[in-house]
Length: 98
Image (tube, rainbow, N blue to C red; front, side, top):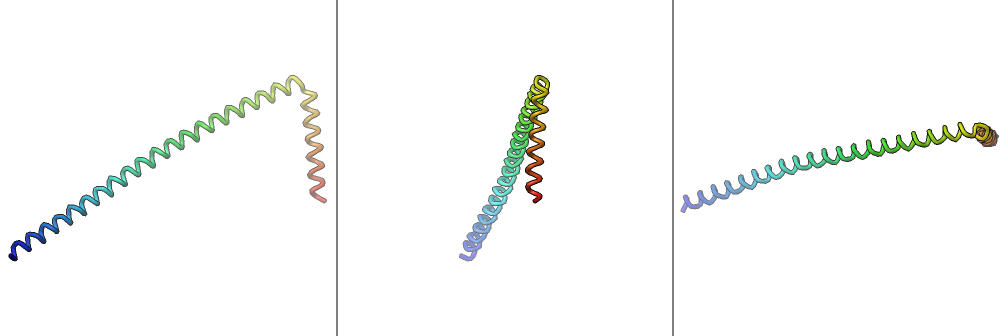
C-alpha cells in the first residue's frame, strides 16, 4: 500500500512538472510572438510615417512651385499683397503693445 501511495505521489509530481514546463513553453512562445508582432507594427508604422512625410514634401513642393509661378506672372500683385500683409501685421503688433 505504501508503494502505491509513493507511485501516486510520484505521478502527481510528474504531472506538476509537466504542467510547469508547458506553462514555461507557452510563456516563452507568447513572448516571442508578442516581440514579433510589436516589431511588425513598428515597421508598418515607420513605413506609414515615411509615406506621409513624402506626400507632405511633394505637396509642399507643388505649393512652392505654384506660388513662384503666380509671383512670376503677377509681380506687382505679389508685391502689393506682401505690402498689405506687412501693414496688417504691423498694426496688429502695434495694438498688442499698448
